[in-house]
Image 1 (cartoon, helix red, strand yellow):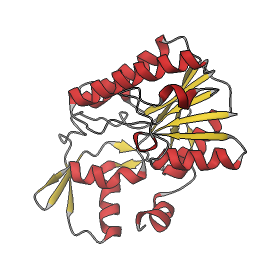
Image 2 (image 1 turned 120 degrees about the vertical axis):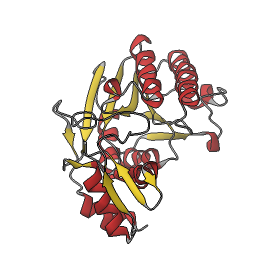
Image 3 (image 1 turned 60 degrees about the vertical axis):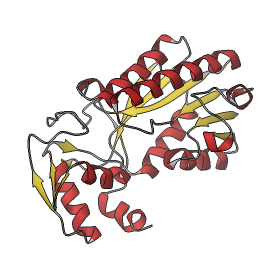
Image 4 (image 1 turned 90 degrees about the vertical axis):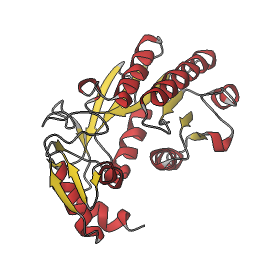
Amino acid sequence: MKIVIIGGTGLIGSKTAERLRRKGHEVIAAAPNTGVNTITGEGLEDALAGAEVVIDLANSPSFEDKAAMDFFEISGRNLLAADKAAGVKHHIALSVVGTEQLQDAGYFRAKLAQEKLIKASGIPYTIVHSTQFMEFLPAIAKSGAVGEAVHLSPAYVQPIASDDVADAMATVALAAPINGTIEISGPERVRMSELVARYLKASGDPRKVVTDPEALYFGARLNDNSLVSDNDPRLGHISFEQWFATSARK
């Protein structure tokens, strides 16, 4: 089966491609650096010719409100039009747990707009809502940096390792479309401020984490339910300690 992965050279894309190729499938890693651009449309028709499944893992290069919205709307429309022209049988997109609750942040408004385009397209689909990647912890720490401290919300998170995400995406790619959303998350629920403090300590970073209930998460105000899943998620098996031991030092 031919499977096209948009964003196929990125963190999740490359790992998902590896898993699907090991199972004998033809996988096209589509990205601007391989000649496929969902914003301009360059290379889309050729990449999707004969494809049965498309996995959209592309992400906006900017979290700025307008840039994110422009990216997901333009990319989404171009990709879905190319899907229809190629007769794609299953469109899969990776999104974020809590997207609908975090609409005061422009990035999450853009992700919701992407999801609405998919649902209205008429193409059989599956949307995968994931909790935050463990690989995103440095960016979370950076987002809360205030001088020599890091101010973060005490809201719960349930981060998932990229290897567990790739396992889930490969499984969804080989299953029938559900025309709905599934959720995936990591095995441990912990407060964001506590987890980032663990990460900084393990990394030898001397900065202190300040637990701040008013701290925003990329522009969004959080509560204990914002970034975790209670909707029967598929759980990954890699703990923070296992992930850090094998991945964070690479």
